Image 1: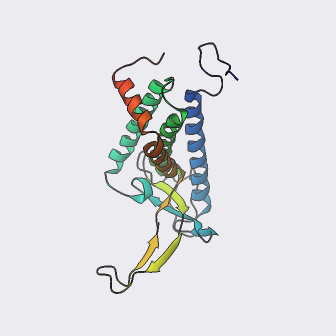
Image 2 (image 1 turned 135 degrees about the vertical axis):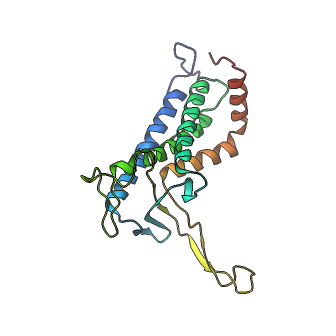
Image 3 (image 1 turned 180 degrees about the horizontal axis):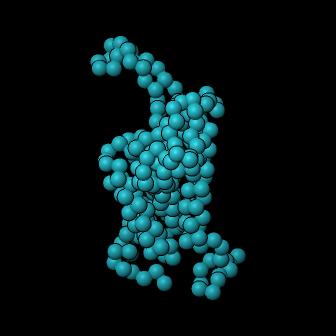
Length: 223
């Protein structure tokens, strides 16, 4: 059966642009709701098992995904803002291309949303939250002010998957007798969105990425 076309000759339904916007807003909203809930209901370091293989564990970090710290805090924050701006510009440029699958736009939207989600923590959290000692929990908009300044907030992480652990055999040089926990990283929804977007992009949409970059930088019209 032939698809019904709209007035500009495209298949009817949710356009790539609106799909990207919905994904970005949904991921940012879900990420911030969970972070604010954890920040105001958990004390720092609190670990609540949901299942044996999944915990909510509240930590904070100054760095990149999974708690890595590679650059100065302000450089990292402004770098995220620039990156999000570039991704939004790129999505706008390619969203109407008939050559690109919607899955590619979904990947871009996930990466954009993930980067944007952690920006809110860095920019605002130092001002709108206090930083009490455990077992007290943080207060939003505390009367005495926040724990830091604009752009100096810490990123909230809570998703923890202690899938399994073991002790390295004593005969292994360097690590023998040491405990090892598989996937000890603690992360958030924004980090997850970035990782999922990048993995899907590499596995399934590398050809779309090549087409998109070629078209954008050759200034090819998508009309």
